[in-house]
Length: 366
Image (cartoon, rainbow, N blue to C red; front, top):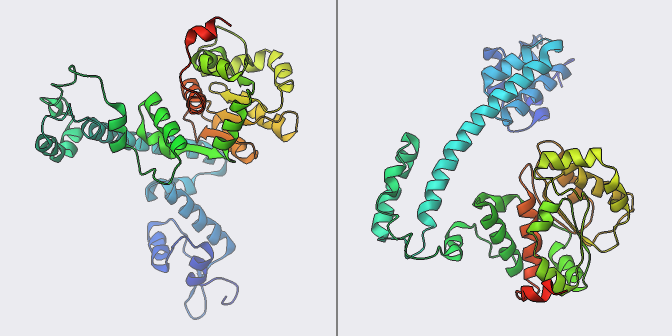
């Protein structure tokens, strides 16, 4: 500290994030940082307000904003700052979505090549030759000709999913066989290999689920659509009954499930009466998962497992974070990703690991 202010080195040290004095001087030139007062020895002297401004610049830059956008945000009037920030966020979001779309096109093309089983690969050399053109073709939008000649064998045999997954999935050698099977089935349920990096298993979820299902635990789902997708024959053979919290057969979307949650009080009674040691699978309404987490926190219910995979853009990510913090064995998909099919697929994969496919007539005759 010199006099009543921070030197430029002290400023950068207090902010961290690899900020250097040279970068600060560059921000002065761009007008991002105001010119500071000078000491009698001509040193720049910075205040706490400068520290806060530099921290905001760093935070916005880490979120992917260009320096020109950051300048506009910092100069906005206080009453207009929120509207300006939202407009800039929307602009940044659209730019990122465009980049993701381009990368998704390239990834899809790679999946189409690398995911081909041996019967679909006309010759390895031909595939490799096509790979050299991949980046150019995806950027120019000429993907149709990329597949010319490579699709000739697709009508001659069923697709070898497991063979394709072995090439496309990331290295899972540190995972258990049951977890690898679970992740593979989730990928096959949605067709998105990148889903693997968002799946979260918390608090010994696999071991807890096997113990619970072996004991014939009750299974609770949020809506009938999830119930329709779960493996009822296997659950029946394990002695697991199935209950639906929001028992409305007309619910077919996350929006409808969310509205039903708020409009009908019946689910509250069902939630509070859930038996200890049950397994809960939520794939539609994020508010149901929030209510489950709150009930767990208040020790109203004690489930053996929660599969929380609702879709949503504000409530769902928050609910999943609360679930991971609850201390209950759980399986979820981080962020906005999810859905009833994924929730049902996760439950089915766990049950399938315990019992071979039963004769459906045994279930229907009960």
